[in-house]
Image (cartoon, rainbow, N blue to C red):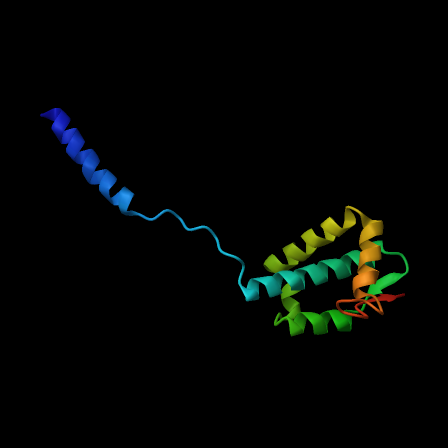
Amino acid sequence: MRGWIIVALLGLLAGPLAAQEAPSEPGPPSKADRQRNNAAKLAGLAAFVDASCPGLKADPDKLEMAVTRLGIDPTELTQGDLHLRAKAYTEIYQKDAEASCQRAVETFGESGRAIPGLIIRK
């Protein structure tokens, strides 16, 4: 009798567990998440260039314009999650500072492919 009670209780407990769905896999990031991340990348790059690339600096007005065009308030980059993300990108760029400075000029310099004039000479 005792065995039947245990089996019945286990059946009652296991039923709802089996009916629950497995947690879904996270999907691709939304457009808003990608834009926030891109804004953090740009801010991280600007901070990196200002600190680590001799003779170069980021144009703060161009940075603000680019971030605003992504739909992000530039002040969000100075606090919270976006600030932490930007700092993380700065650290990533510093791992190979020379190559990162070169890529910054090629991509964001006066004749850059992405945002020309974001990175300028001091």
